[in-house]
Length: 140
Image (cartoon, rainbow, N blue to C red; front, side, top):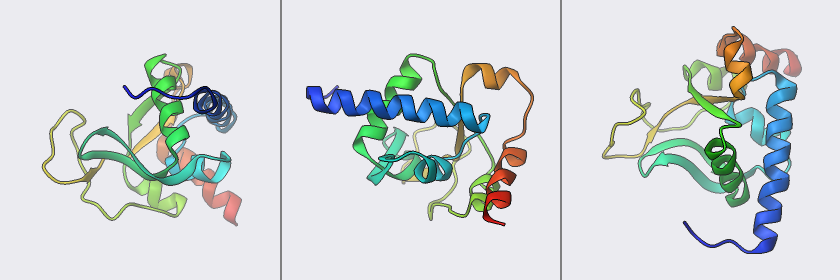
């Protein structure tokens, strides 16, 4: 794990709080498109991946990647596989083949579409596609 400076840690902590607040405010099943749109400092030039070739999203800042790692490690956020239609409805998809298996070691870069929720939100019933409609209503 790379050593981070105090300013990077502070930036990551502030971003983690903003990400968590956004996911809670939107009710869970939040796509990376929504996080880029709603959280200042989330969007960037890096890819966020579970494994070297299993990419969750491209266009994430280094501070956002660190914040997501921290939130997932402390079990305050969970990544839930979703249909790529969620991202299509939110207005943006990746131009990569779509992976179906989270633990598989893909040979080429592969997109694994997920939504972000808190553990308590996962206990409630709700469809990611139903949640994606909020983006359509906001644009209308």
